[in-house]
Image 1: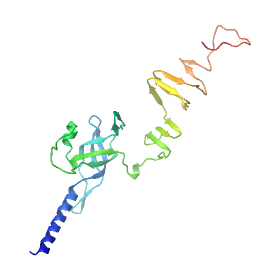
Image 2: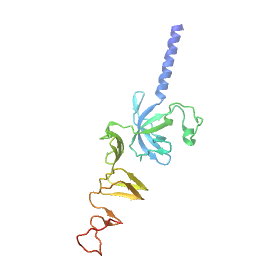
Image 3: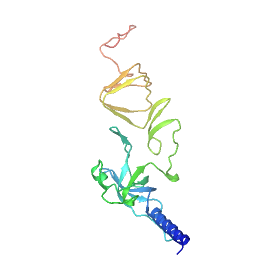
Image 4: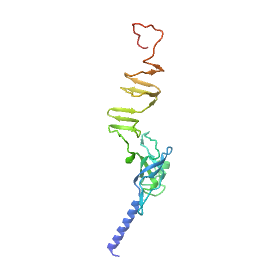
Amino acid sequence: MNISEWIGNEEEALKVMTENYIQNARVAIPAIIVQFDPQKQTASVQPAIKDTLQGQSVALPELSDVPVQFPRAGGYSLTFPVKAGDECLLVFSDMCIDGWWQSGGVQNQAEKRRHDLSDACAILGITSVPKALKNVCMEGVQIRNDSGTDYIQISEQGILLKSKNIRIEGITDIVGVTTINGSHIGTDGTSTIKGNVNITGDAVIGGISFAGHTHGGVETGGGSTQTPK
């Protein structure tokens, strides 16, 4: 075998090895939640794109115990009621994540593997066109339900809370102009409002109508009562 033939065979062998590695290495893929475990924050997930093996389209296996990512740092978290059918993005780790997932901290690899289907993490939020959100706010940040009927919006115009029912539990201290449009607001605790309060309509305090209540033991006449004490 001459040098050119040897080099050609070596290049061909490297090409085959590289292609085999690429075929087996996983990086990221969209997927669909099958089942969610809220205690462990893991999910069974079905990859949403089929692979091609020997000219045939083959569905990748359902993956179990996949850690689900919630935005979290500094003692605060943003959680979601993850449900079957939710879409996500699977990211496959460079190394085996089993030891870290079970114990946290810095751990040795339980197995020597790279970009394996067993080492996926699910990032929530990626979506296909059929499940794209409608009426996305372009003026600020929103925490909302998918239908857009309930949300908290932060923009340069201020903070807007929209919902059929708003419940506040605990001590509430309101400073500044506050406008409430709705028929009901529930509070558990003490509410302190600093500033003027303008109410359009009646206010019921302790079960007594402010606009419609009357006082007994007085005589009608042209004088005025004193201010409330």
